[in-house]
Image (cartoon, rainbow over all chains, first blue to last red):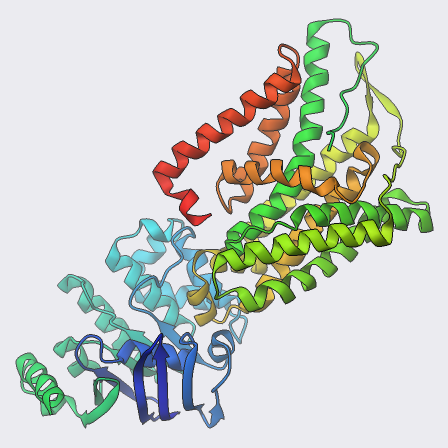
Length: 236
Length: 300
């Protein structure tokens, strides 16, 4: 599904992603894990085309995406839900979902809206409310609902549960689980042990812009174990 | 630039008629201003840039209408054709100049559009002549109850209002309108959702140029056209757009009409020069208050 080879990204003078290579097969849920600032978000942004200075090869279903603008990559089937600023604050909830639905390959706007609302029914109740007036958790739900409802070939989600209260974490986790069960391929960046264990079949660990190992959720017995392993690897 | 002349209204005999007359005059001035300001507001909203050449597309719209009128002898056709020509030309020209500078400093875009303004003004003087082109209004006065009023001025009001209403609904409900607002609020996220951002930019630049050109063409019988006509109108339009809220299409339209009405009705009680000072003094005050609340001037 996704093949990434020797991906580099630069932010100003910093070489933030230093030759990352990995692949994801269709229907798989994979995580990028590591400490803050090791290049996980930059990797996702490079894949969707929001990092301007990159090099390397990115292929989606064998089609090279390198050099394409972000909106072209999105139209080819890449979905992206960023950690912050995922919503358009001065547009209603429904308009936020429709922005992507207007491009939907099948032209099924009503279907996209219904899918988004079925994942998070609270959004249907608030469909005419400005997105900027939603709570932080509801804004996360809106960004994720839109990402899933557009049915991309590969959905990339950055820190979906960061800063959320447990009830909202559960809702977000369930929405992602539903998408994965329905066959969506997912690449997620998150540090929640429970979320990773429930969603992912594999985890790529990153440190200082490099991939430093591949793990399976069963490799870690506890959140502390996961954290210690990441930090331990980073020291090597 | 002189705004549409007040109607003398020979049959105006009492204060109520004078007020009606001035209300109509205010609508004419306001609608004209709104057309130019709406184009600027669109650019602020989508690109967050100040286009110093906006007034020159007003000037080019006037010239385009004048030349097409000479060929077709149909005034309304000339305004439409002139608007389309200048809209497409302006959209492509601005895209070619602004696109490479988008990720650079805003100052570069300011300077580039200022340079473009000077080039267009000098080119118009060289190729089109420095003289003033005058066109007679295509329609005579009509009776509105107790007063006579130029029918063409009412056409300008109707056209201006129609464009603003259509523009507002287009922004709210059409695909490109929704995309325009999305790009204005979060360009990166819009791109990540597949919104064709370059196409949205080109459209915004073309529509913005076209709105200025439409104003230039419509106001040709009221103001005439010369190479420097855009300079004065753009200053007023900038002030209106900032007072209406940067990037706020509806706010710019409302402030335009308010400015037109205050100018017209105020002229019944104070001299126009005094009114101008008071009006724009109030606008400056508004800007100071808003900048403290919303840091709007930082965005400038």
